[in-house]
Amino acid sequence: MTAAYPAPVRSRRRAGLGLVAFIASAAALVIGMAGIWLAGFFVGRVVRLVDYPDLIQETEAQLWDTLERAIGAVIILVVAWVLHALVALWGLIQGIVATSLGRGRGWGIAAIVLASSGWMLLLAFTQHALLAGLMGLMPFTI
Image (cartoon, rainbow, N blue to C red):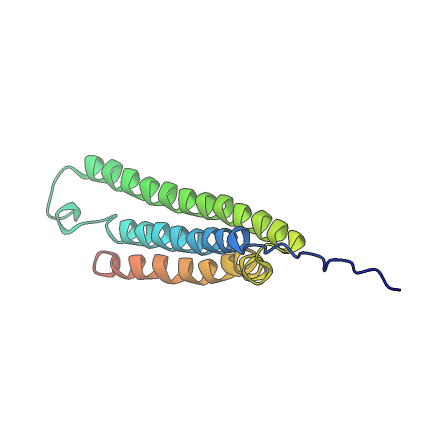
């Protein structure tokens, strides 16, 4: 005689943890790109037509104003990278936890990949954004 045992009940795990990790990793990339674009935009506005030394006599005031705008662009760039790093770290850790617990394993793996390799995409984007900003300065440097 065999005893009838009830079938083990499998708990339905939700993919919420992995999905939140993926959204955090994607948000880190978007935040980084937006900040880097803004820094490139500010680099292009370092020197304006009214700041051209031959047109206005207050050269010292122009230089300090230009220096302030350049420092502002660097600060925006650094803040963008730091924010990206912090949010990507959150996505990476939460993706690892989601993968290890099996709560959204696929989303967790995608979050890990995006959080750990997103900086390479941002590095290329940084070069393009800053060069585009510098190209806006070309009439003033020739």
